[in-house]
Image (cartoon, rainbow, N blue to C red):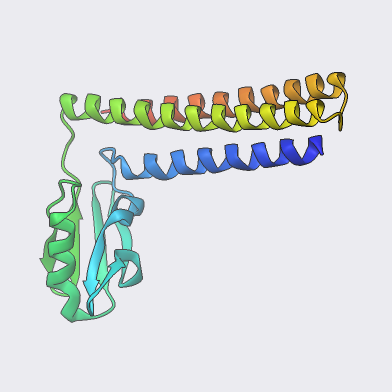
Length: 185
């Protein structure tokens, strides 16, 4: 039973880390990365469809993404979707290809993005602490119902705390990497 509680807590903690990685992908650095356009949705035959389902997104060089739509008729729609997204990007069409240059980041913009990254990291930490709290309350409930001993409960709580510390350290390491990436010129 203790192992089930621990496994559930670890699964929730992993999901928090994955969610943090996904939110960090949306914060653009000065470099081009296809994941930047993951949040862009295109009106495709009346449906809001993710951009990567109607076009291929590739890195052309360090500062430019290229978007190749599967259907040529989608070019204006994709262009409009990229411009109307809150990413601050201005696509340029040349024939069948849409190029998306990454603008240079100002110092102020970089600092705002670091603030956003820190806020995302704090949300992930809170989520991990919530998983710990839930696991500990499940262990207390088992001990209260006399299904496990007090020593087993204490040992289980210590193991959950070790998991928590490991995942919090992973979040801090990921945040530090993102901060370094954002502040690099």
